[in-house]
Image 1 (cartoon, rainbow, N blue to C red):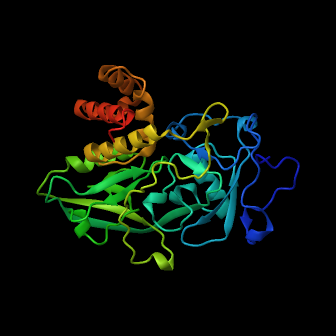
Image 2: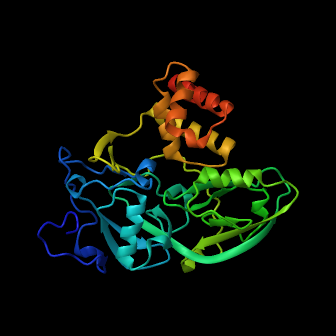
Image 3: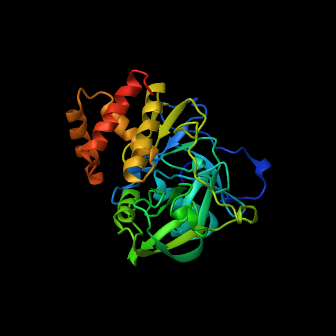
Length: 337
């Protein structure tokens, strides 16, 4: 029985008339009565493979509305705990394979990286799913050390372009756009790779040589054709929701209510995200938030480096980067950023 439906007759996942019912269903989590307008968290760890989903009795009762970004009826989805489950629910609602979903944006159908669904969803947010469109294969000459790309991933195995720096090598190639999924580089298939792995591969390509990149662009609506998004950062910070708290769904255990980041944490997260882009060519506010959480109570950079190695060792952060992150967190604490 689908979560949250009780003994009621199962409703159709597609809604033709938006005025027929409210946008959101009630929240039904023990100890959370009266929660108003919070944020759902889909933390990066929850998207990891091999972790069993929590039992239905521990899942919050939430219903979200969604559409395909290029145009569709409105669908209702519920009962997901991580990004992979979210894509599966979207697939069920629209009768498409979950693997067709590239990424989601909140409250806009456009390829707007400021509205990208990351680790959290506001309880009043409307989800737009961007699905695979045209494939393209491009020969690129790497004339500079840096290509000018910032890479992110969807938490379910697809890395895509989040930003293209103006004046860069890639900026000169008009057929490469923000939102394009990177399928392969020089024949090396990248499905299932994390963003930092793809960024590292691009960085290590030899300067002065050609390489081949295969991309998949999101299917576009008519008003999105010929639009080349710049992928600029949002000035509003990490949180996309407008609520007072954060409802974070986890792969194991019940959902928990957390407060929104403090002013210090928001500044530190933004600065660490800038450092991630500068050093590694990725932006990941959830990763930045994890690093700030690990570092805010550490007494010295050695303790911080040890905590990073234990929790995020797969990233193999260089020592200089770790030291700069430690400094950024310290600066945010005393109000220097």
